Image (tube, rainbow, N blue to C red):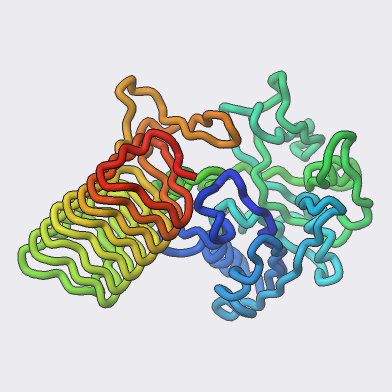
Length: 402
């Protein structure tokens, strides 16, 4: 059994986190998105996965090598167009057709699907995974015929035609390459749904509605959304570090090797903390928080429902709420992130010159790799600080620091 993971994209919507690493290497519960996908495929009996790479391909290959828990990994780089542009998901798939033998999964490298939903695909020659949505205008919507098979896919319909969105996650065989690469007028890229339109006229393509979850990572705050879902699967505490006398661990907590929870620290699970960290003394780690490896959280710090990646230091008297922080970030003492608007509407963030609604009532700062904040920095909700930037002592961050 083979699988193809499409992981070549540049992922500009997840800037500034993906300025320094490809999106499949962003972590959820201290594990790269790509590792979550490979684990799900292992549960489905996949023995070889072909990863289509492009943007920062060396980082992906360096992180995973040529095997993963006994699964063979093969890398193929997606060629760019004449103007240096990427040519789409179907083009990426055609790049690896010489490596494919029979049936194979196709997954997008930045979206998480549960193994139980992927296993349903094994029962069918051709299938695609769908999700019921309240916003069909944002997706490719599947049209199902009277026999229950795929009849068509309409991309981002302006009028209501149904609510079953294609979310990626396909079962194909090599017949799909009988259809030549074609793109619609005005398109710069070749897309898998365009091929599906032709395939479903000749073959029975089975629609499978998600029973577990589909977790996209289109924007940085989607890492928080995904964490809030997946952390529910952590059912038991696992303490491999040291809990000093006077520290309190309440609820489910995972604490890695070499980590010390100092006296006076209060941890309210579910919480995941990596290896070789120092937490406390006298700090409050609230539920939903994930802390990576080699991190330090100082005295009188409060962290709520946030993601800290590796080598992050949070100076004393700081507050992080609903934040995402990349690697090697240093929060100066007294750094405060606001995560809630006074008008109580969802937090927006600037992308491509436009405000994008996060859909989250609470969203703090998005901090890229290697950022240092000065002491007593205050950051407005939804603001972003790009890699290697700094703030001055006492600075108020009202706009993104690019």
